[in-house]
Structures are given as C-alpha cells and as structure tokens.
Image (cartoon, rainbow, N blue to C red):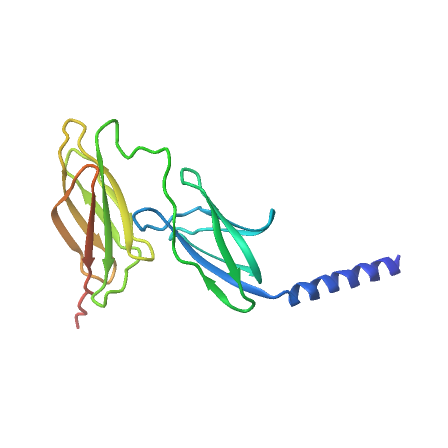
Length: 214
C-alpha cells in the first residue's frame, strides 16, 4: 500500500514539474462590432488541428487574454446572433505576449427597425482635455416627455452606443437632449442632438475636471 502511495506521489510530482516546464505565451485580443464597440460574451477557442486546446470569453469591453503553450493555433470566435469566425491563425512564442488586431464580428438575422419604423444609432466617445478616454461616464438621453429615456455608462474606451427608435406615430428624426456626468468632472449637457432613422450619429464629448475650491 505504501509503495502504491509513493508511486502516485511521484507521478503527481512529475506531472507538476512537466507542466511548469511547458513553454507558455500570452494572447491578448479584442472583439468589436461594426461600429467599433467592444462585444461581450464572445467565446474565443484555440485549436490545433481538431483538438481544442483552451478558450476564453471577452469581457464587457470586448477584451480577452489567456495563457497558452507556445505554438500555432486556429482561433474560433462564436457568439449568438453574430457571424462565426474560424479563420484566425495565431502563433504564440514562449515568454512573449501576442496582441491580436481588433476583430470585427457582424450581426446576422437581426432587423434594426422597430415594428417597421426606422431606428437610428447614437455613438458617443467621451474623453478628458488630454484626449484620454473616460470610463463609467453616465450618459442620459432624453428624446422628449412622451418617449422613454435611455441611459448607460461608457466602457473602458470611453465609448457607448444607443439604438433609438423614432416615435411610433411619425417617421421623423429624434431631437434629443443628452447629459454626461462623471464624479470629479463638470457635467455637460447637449440640446437638440438629431438622430435620424437608419443612420449613425457620432458625438465626441470632452469633460473638464471640476475646479477645486479652497
């Protein structure tokens, strides 16, 4: 019995030592949509031939990173509602970080219109005076008293996308007021921002730090 236990311990130690000696590298990447916004919950799987080696999932900014043995791989990107990508070839060098270019995934089988009425996209990029993107900026869009209010926060790239529908009773562009708020910065308010159906409106907004009072 003692001999069997000793043998098992030796096998375990050898396995650990072998794993520690395996040359490893790091892969980093980002998955975006057609508008350049990071996509969350994309499954990124790395294959050698038909063998699945490992995988990762993109975060709320579309980024992913994973340690993987050195070698060449074929990456597969999959997410419900998006076109699958299976032709991404990746080479990993031991001890190095391989940074992949941003990969664009396209939506399939979805209609951007609401009940036959055209919807528009509003994409905002919020930055500071130095041009650095600001994360977690609260953006509140108010189309009018009779329409719903949209709000969300910018991602790590300072980006945020809204999909907005025109009023059901009329096929007219939306005239919106938009507020940008982040603690430590002056709140910015924009009025009469026009968003047209089936078009994309882009806004670049700069926030200034709040002045300190003695």
